[in-house]
Length: 82
Figure 1: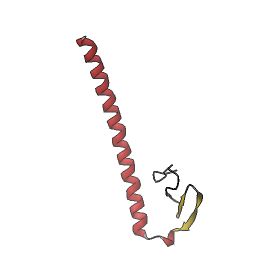
Figure 2 (figure 1 turned 90 degrees about the vertical axis):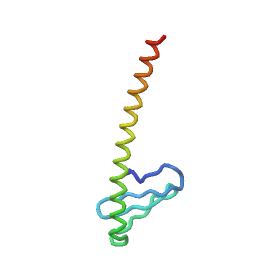
Figure 3 (figure 1 turned 180 degrees about the vertical axis):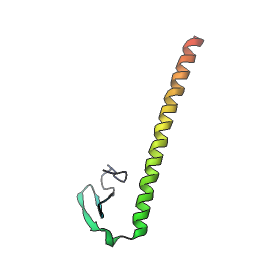
């Protein structure tokens, strides 16, 4: 499932794939709409959000690595000080 997937019950899920858009929630499996029923602006927005989500996920991963590095440095310095 793509980044628009949400595991909360009742939340909308969006999946843009092969000229179709699946829209649904967890109560039903969703319906498939032809790409012609949505505007190119909506597809552009979905593509933008996909890129932005990937960028933000990368930033979060970088922050987690930095946080771990700082934690290790702190632990090393606190054991030296004792």
